[in-house]
Structure formats: C-alpha cells, structure tokens
Amino acid sequence: MPDIMGGVRRKLKFFDLIKPGTFVTLLFWWVISAAAAFLFSYRVCGIVGSAANASLAGALAAAAVTAVYAAVVAHKEISSLKLIIDEDGEVMTNIVGGTMISCDDDFFTIKKCTDRFYSMLGYRIGDIARRYRGEFSKMLVGDESRGEFARLKRRLRETGSGQARYKLLRGDGTDMWVACSSFLTKDRGGNSVVYSVFLDITEEMTLQQKYALAEARNKIVFENINSGIFEWDMIRGTIDISDHMERRFIGAVKDGPIPALKVKNYIEPEDYEHLIEKIESVKNGESDKIVMTLGLKNADGTVTHSDMSLVAIRDHNYVAVRMVGILIDVEERHRREEELRSKASRDSLTGLYNKGATQQLIENTLELRGNQEHAVVLCDIDDFKSVNDTFGHGAGDEAIKMIAGLLSETFDRGCVIGRTGGDEFMVLCRNIGGDYYRLRKQLRRLNENRPTIEEGGLRRELTLSIGVALYPSGGETYDELYKNADTALYKVKESGKAGYEVYTGY
Ligand code: GH3
Ligand code: MG
Image: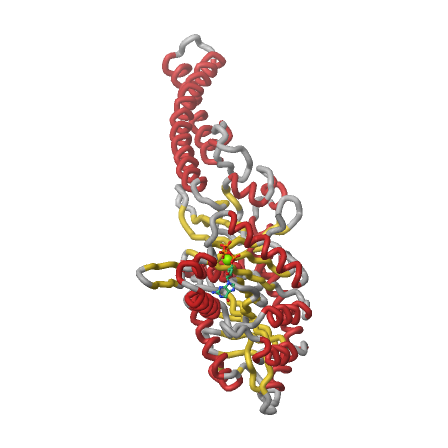
C-alpha cells in the first residue's frame, strides 16, 4: 500500500526513522558520553598524558554508546512502523473501493491511500502530494461537493462517521463522482485520523442526470402535447394527466393530479374490468406493460376508442411504483371494425372473422403505420384430415369450434381473430411493443391447453402448428406477413408439429 509520498509497499528506509526527537536525544547522548570519556581518561587515569589522546578516546566511547542507543531506537521504530503498514495495508487493500487514511484536519491531509484509490482517480503515486500538498479537499470540484465535505466534517464531529457524494478532479483533468463513507479513528500514535472508503458512482450519476434531463423534457411535452400522456403514481393513488385529456374527459383543466379511483368513471365497464385484471398482473410482477383498446367516455357524453400503452416503473424491490401511459385515438379504426362485425364478415361455423374481413382488419391496422409493432399469428390444426376420418365430419366441425374458442380465450379482446381456411386461423396482436414474453406465453398456451375429442372410446388431443411474422421486421404488407408466417408454420410442420416458430428471415 503506498503512502502519500509514494512507494508501493516500499522497504523502510533510514530516513523513515528520523524524527526530530530522536536526533536531539542521540546528540545529547553523544555529548555526554564524549565528555565522560574525556574526563575519565585525562584526569583519573592520566594515560598517554595528552588532552588530544583523551579526546579521541572520549569520541570513540561516545560513538559506541550512541550506536547502541540508535540500534535500540531503530529496532523499536521499525517494529511499530511495520505493524502499522501491515495492519492498515491488509484492511485497506481488502476493501473493494479506494481507501484513504487522512489527518483529521480541515483539509483531510492524506497520510496513506490504496493503489485502488490512485487508479480510480487516475493519479500516479506521489501526484496528489505534489499537486495538492496531499490535501484531499483540493480535489473537490464545485460548491456542491465542497458543501458535502463541510457537512461530512460536521457529521464526523457529531457521530464519528458519515457518508457523502463528491465530484472529484481526476489526474487527467476530468471529473468523476464518488460515494464516500468515512469514520474517525485513532492511529497507533493516538492521533485522530479519518478513514474513508470511496466507490466510483460516475455512471450512476450520469444516468441520473440524463434521467432528470429527460424528465424535464417530458414535462414540457406532457404539458403541451395534444395527445393523451399520463402518469399514475401507484403509491399515492393519483394520476397526472395532460391538459388536453382533462379537457376531453373532465371538460375543464384542473390543478394537480386526480385520484386514480375516479378513472373508473371514464372507462367503459367491460374495458375497465379487463384493465383491472391486467393491472393485477403488473402488480404481481408477471408483466411490465399493458396494451389494450379502451372505450372512453368523454365530457360531452360520447364514447370514443383509444389504444392505450402503459409501462410500469419498478423500484429496487421490483415493486411497481408508477405507470406511464399514452392514449392514441383509434376511433376511425374502431368504426370500421364495427362495420365488419356484421354477419357478412363472419365465419358461420365459428363466429370468428372470415378470411376477407381478417385481411381487411389487418390492412386497416397496417395503414395507420406509426412505429408500433404487431404480430401476425397463423395457426393450422395438425393432422386434421385424420380427425375427420376417425370421428366424422361433424366431430371435425366441433374440433374447429373448440380451436376457435381456445384462440378467443388466449388472445385479448383487442386482437383480430379470424378463420382463414378449413383448419387455418389467423390472429393479429396489435401493438405488442416488444412484449415478446407475453406473446410467447400465449403461443405456448395454445399447445398446452389442448382441446380433446372423445367418442366411441377413442380420444384425440388437438394440436396446432403456429407460424408468426412480426410487423414491420417480418413483413410490411398483409401479403408479406401472411407469406412469412406461413413459411414459419411450414417449418413447424416439418419439425414435428405442435409448436410455434417466429419468422426471422430465413
Ligand atoms: P397437417 O398436419 O399437415 O395440417 O395435416 P392436415 O391433415 O391437417 O392437412 P390439411 O391442413 O391440409 O387439411 C385440412 C383438412 O381440413 C382438409 C379438410 O378435409 C378439412 N376441412 C376443411 N374445412 C373443414 C370444415 O369446415 N369441417 C371439417 N370437419 N373439416 C374441414
Ligand atoms: Mg392442418
């Protein structure tokens, strides 16, 4: 572990041991020993008879005494210094973040810090000592960080420990964000020191700042846009809606959010029930998104239809705390769909849309363009001829109805479900918006909940081969989507049936 003056786990040098006190003591012993030896040899023994020889003897004796003294002092110093470095080094280098021990002064003058501290901040060993005279406070960038530093110092005085977030100046002149945890302690010499651990949180802070910026932008859009954007605070139970929506549903612009419970008044009862079911699946973590068509009651008493997309925002415990939504008016599409609900558009056996109506409805949706993603699902009953052959044509018809029922149960009300051939069906899932998880779950379900025909002791489970093409990646027109979904379906037939395949441009 390097100390602030540099040197990574360097060997102790002689000058590490030199302290002003040691020098004075050594000098004192040298003078005393020299004087004693001089007096003893010159006066008492009278040897060799000259003052010069007595002085030499005195000097030699003094040197011997001070050398012994110095050796004793050095040994003591080396042992205690080694102990400090080893103990601190072990603690400090075992910590994930960068660690620093500083004096408990106004500037947190650094005594020691780990390699990680240096590498995190992009300094070379010794840089901090040279550039900032070892003062940590000189690395703080901006008033916010300096304020945090002042607050941390106060907390250390009051409680002995504290946390702070600083922006620090890196060795290359750029900034970085760190989270710091500090506590007061004593070093071996009994001096008060501050022990601090730093973690790099630059990425997190950058994201947070970007998010704040995006939020500010959204706010502007939210206030001014002429469409239905809203935000539901699931903890407070309130909904913030744009002025445009307030005018549309309430008939006036109100101040502040509205209670979420009031929403019930503005949604057609059947749609409201579906919405509640979907909200439950968000709350219990099954899905993160709600996409559906809603009939909405306007302030003027009319009902119009909108496609709604709601996305959940979860906290760190994965609890949905907010949902942000958008409503897109689809009244025109809805009106055309209503027209197609007539008998002429229906398949007489199943009540589903017939081939022509299915195509028309899919084309209506594709016409709207936009950047929404849709899925075209093509299903064909496996070995259906043999169902007819084994159980008769009547039972075959029943089987077709069972499959129609299965499709209606599996896919939402907002989907277009049609019978496009003898034992072939097509489903359009609108605006799936990347929720492939949900789509896959629905596709799997079609072969899990198998309708069964039982007659005259014979039993037969019905399975489906399913091909999927996604708009726009798997086709941009009805014909392209049909062709590609059929290609995917064919692959399933080839590889054993009873399954699904999504077209990916083979
Ligand atoms: P595969 O697994 O390859 O799909 O084999 P399959 O036997 O299902 O073959 P295919 O899909 O080509 O056969 C469809 C059969 O569905 C042919 C026809 O006899 C039967 N079919 C078509 N329309 C009706 C209907 O309205 N009622 C009944 N019962 N059967 C029908
Ligand atoms: Mg078939």
